[in-house]
Length: 73
Image (tube, rainbow, N blue to C red):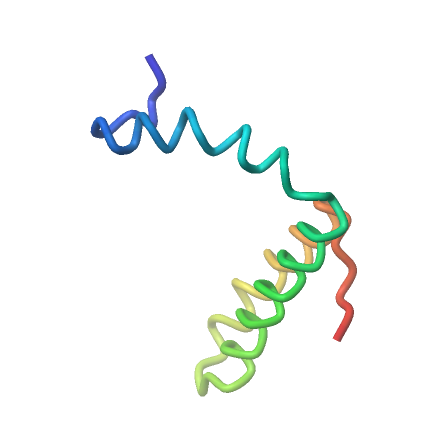
């Protein structure tokens, strides 16, 4: 049994998500991930705290590297 199974609705999502994701072209997915990460980075930039700068920005950089999503600002 899948460790992520929490409810019948979650089970449906777990079944439907992989085939739906495979329908999205890689270049479109890359643009979407870039925009999502850009929005997170913009939110961090406007934040007054420096903790998120130190913790989240390196994670975003690692994600960009691992997923091969360049920062196309």
